[in-house]
Length: 68
Image 1: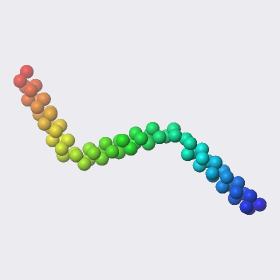
Image 2 (image 1 turned 135 degrees about the vertical axis):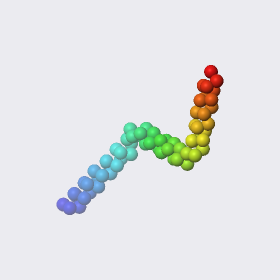
Image 3 (image 1 turned 120 degrees about the vertical axis):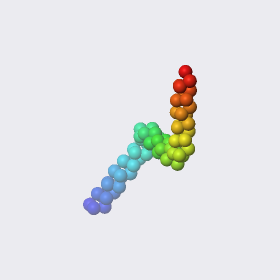
């Protein structure tokens, strides 16, 4: 009796894992999350360089706006 119950449970687990392996609905979400993690990592790594570039662009815009 116990062996049949254990075999039944293992069969259910195997079937559930087979269905989960064929289910790819969440793959798009995982890809978007991984892309966001990489982009955030790049921003953190190159924060000083990005700040310098953005400040330079805004100062140039302000200087050229004063000449108009």
